[in-house]
Length: 181
Figure 1 (tube, rainbow, N blue to C red):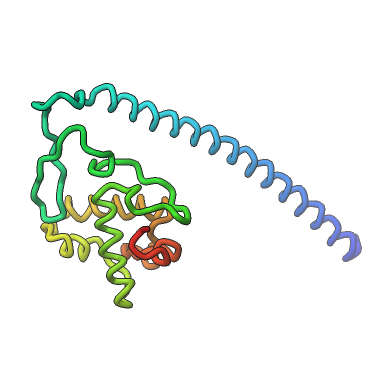
Figure 2: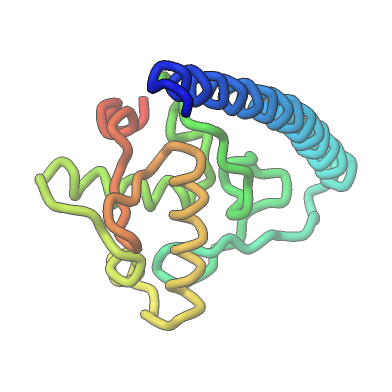
């Protein structure tokens, strides 16, 4: 019968092997992530270039208008050459200290503004249904799910946290920067 010390040494060896395997797997995943991020960045650049090519020239006075969905449910015409921040379906960058809220599209900025007001007043997280009411939207599944999708994307990118499933608030760093610089 093996000794207690022998059994402990066997378990330690097995644990070391498992740690080594997990480290190798983590390295492999990290490498895959780096490739995916590079591909994503190339895709974003390509989309930007395509948008520049397809955008009308600045001298094109009679260019088409693009409608932007406002929080009150209405639409307001915006010239096709308007800034990227006015586009409602732009990419949400990863949050980092010093990144201004203006890096986000108007819809995402509205979500941050509502949650910042609640944070300033010491109120808790908001559900997407409550956000829809704040924005004056109809509380119907399509509108609520659109807000939920945006909020989940902002959680994944570090702008928001979801302390309770379905309820969102500003992440600590975002709340600490006030009105987004």
